[in-house]
Length: 70
Image 1 (cartoon, rainbow, N blue to C red):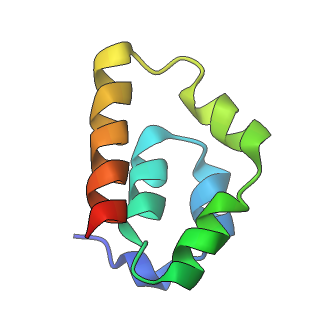
Image 2: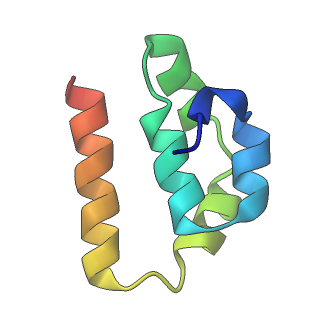
């Protein structure tokens, strides 16, 4: 297990992979977290997701929706 709160958004983005994106999503606990997530550089997120297979994209979207609806 990796303690997510021990990483900044910038540190996770630096990894530029899908698991780091899921970790970023999992950090969403407050409205401030959501605001910070929405301010992440779109270009970096696009780079992470550009080669992601559709089935994995669907999982990431489901995780994001679940975190935002809690």
